[in-house]
Length: 285
Image 1 (cartoon, rainbow, N blue to C red):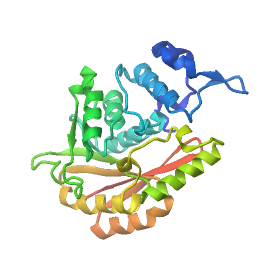
Image 2: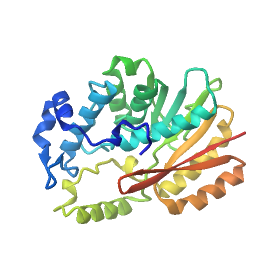
Image 3: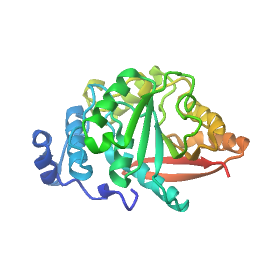
């Protein structure tokens, strides 16, 4: 993890259960005598997230509808810290403003961005229910509501169009694109996780998510290609364009597209436990 990530240390479940007492019913000692939870239990992970947000980020009210993605907060915080490293290179002396593409019902990236670094954030999503829930999460916390705006992208064929206005400037954009190319692929991956975790069925798994959160036509690779293509139109209104890239094998195609549009770019490697991912970041000089 990034050295600035507060979650580099093991969870202190005594502190966390003091913050959210309901979490205590999910905490147990493993065979090593360490307190933990069952991370395949969606309710347990939801309560853990509530506790982490309250203890470390001062967010008292946060939730998501059943079967929506419950984000792993340490990994999400890593993205924010790496973005900060990029912005420090720019020596910016004004209020940082950023866009989260596909904010989801959880709105976790804008929440962390504002809570950790005080950035003003705009979150966008194509789904009405996600937008409504994200707004509820933001508006339930006064400090967040003053610094974060959530809007719906009504044109499913666009990413920045209709969102960034003529006089707007954002220091960065960020995105965690849909991972899979189809519902079939998503279900296959889910079944594999179930098998690896020795669970009985997929309903026992906390990897929730709605269709738009999990897959889109062409999957991650095509979505990022669209993101890159449209970024050209807004090259004077966004400093750094960034996106998570979960599949390393997608990088050559991404690099080819970035070279084609004449952008300078870099890849930032990230790792949380056994999970490896990376951020692709590009800009126009």
